[in-house]
Length: 226
Image: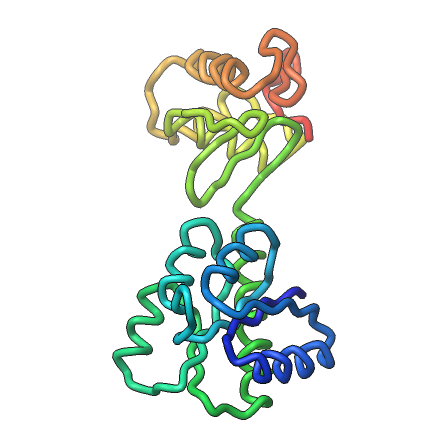
């Protein structure tokens, strides 16, 4: 885990850095908001601990800037404890708040808790993303990609590729797909499945005429090859 500590009090930064490194974290230091934004843009951090009042750019503005390109968890440090400061901190992108002077044991506990919550969120997000070869779909956002480029799918096209990708290797007959994707009450032509499979190949396969993922089992139906 890599942490960025940002504060214009160099002795405080040194103390936090020493204690966190003793816990096994890798720690970088910055001493003003501008430097923090620059470092957060160029490095991947798991957590940022940042003071509210700093020269050049304060912690609120730095948090807002960082939120433009990163979701990294931020703990805000401040010598002031008014509720308005806390509210502003959260509105500008802070995830937690601790008032100076603080006990280093409390800071370590906050760090562990925030990193744990962040890890759980990342795991949940990754569970919603399905990737195979050039094809990637996000089932929560209902977005789809081919070779990193976003591709627009209709609602039924997305439902169809989601079902196939979640069950790689399982062969579905046209009747199965019609029932599962369109519903048991659907009265349309069974060939609508073929039409949607063809469109999915055109949108997601690198060579639609020679599919490598959205496959046909002749005489049976369709399946996804992982």
